[in-house]
Length: 369
Image (cartoon, rainbow, N blue to C red; front, side):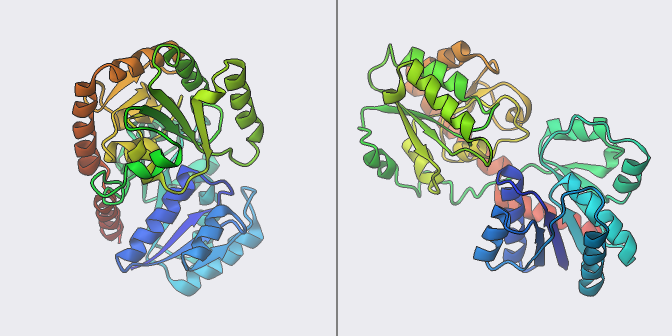
């Protein structure tokens, strides 16, 4: 089987990471896989580092005749058995290229983000008619695809994002490394969130909770892990300014970008996932895999991952007071933290294991040929 995976995004987030992980997994399973990406993008850079065969296309507009002809030639030359698009905009390049090349290769779409634009006009029907199956990463995305695209239910498959549960395994990761780095004692409870600095990730609610909790608990420390995405630096500055206004800057460790996520999670006692509108939430799945009790917003793709009063406490989205209340319930009960921890690890291994995901993906590829 020869696979072409496209992801023409210039950003670096869940969609782009999914693309890289999927390509690496297919290669690991001895499936010849090549990547189409945007030149100079972070995904392109990572593909080069990983020695992944890649082709770059500066595709920005919905119709780009030169790019379409170039991709058509590539498809015809390499005779791909399967093509997967990592984003719906890619379809506007891939579908015309497939038509021009005469290829009958099955076409899959991985849908990572919800859309609020109805795409049922004549042109969209022509584009989506060529899609063999669409992979929805959560039940929310399944519903969104049904409501906004011409795809029928039989063409939409739930294929949740996955994580490497052998890498995110609390039995294999040193809990003390990060705690020593930031002088967190064994007696301290460390509470943290991992998210890029972007509106809607819930940093404001986290700060509100920190402000309330730090007044009542002297042995609790807080950590925010992540950096601003391209063009969102002002938002990161705003969050730190709010922390300064609340006089809690000294209560929070801002780590910036870290590439040691398993070690960061191992160091935490409680994980917070306050995002307002997450299609899935890879960081949350990773936290569950590390056996971390968590407090999460009760919305969207979070509900595919966390189970209230089993792996996590759910709080009202956007409500910093409710977040603080649920965190304090965990602070006050070591027994609950331990119960959540066991259930979280079990759920992650059963539901979100990367090898299981890869097997399902390959199965759908083979079934379509």
